[in-house]
Length: 254
Ligand code: HPA
Image 1 (tube, rainbow, N blue to C red):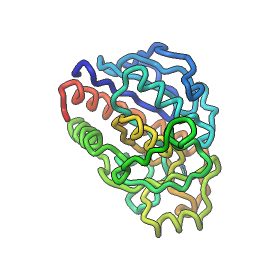
Image 2: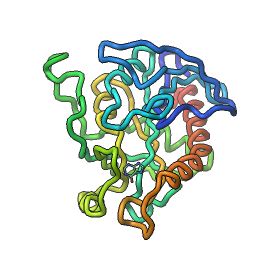
Image 3: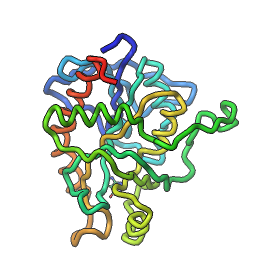
């Protein structure tokens, strides 16, 4: 990896233990924006340097609308991150967004409200309007798409991520509205994370795993057991894509 490039992963939960992934605490301190969700860990996946932060804390206890997204991104950048790969579990809205599928969304629609959505809100820092037509960094998405193809793992390379407030799941009518809006996936965490990353000049992309059909789209109600089971089933492929992506980043893929 070129000296200045460092990839951080924001995981939906703690870094998986074992395998080739050994992560030590790199920082456990406050930022000017408050406390990150938990310790930032530094280490490697199959020998490639990486930072890892569990978005919902360790243990998993911080609701999506209460995550301190500003502190998380600020802490990662302070530790040298240049690129952020966000892991997001999502519900599938598009017909081909079946549980177990992996996605690199290229667009998003923000349905969240009341979150601290900017560093530059005119209070803490002077007001700024960032360009956000492409909310996920096209070059980092291309790197992830190439990584997935190099390691023989199928990912859908476009898709619209609709970000809801949570922590409750959606109603069936909300999902139908989101489908009419053009959403393929529904999750609770890509915003304001993606916008804050852009404000800091970090490259940011989401690697999303579909863990359930969205509300009303399957005969059975959604259960947390099914979500947890499906997410665990995706993790092996996600780690392989990450390992390939870190290798490409090391090789200077741009
Ligand atoms: N809705 C919102 N967020 C989610 C879902 C869902 O169905 N599944 C996993 N995260």
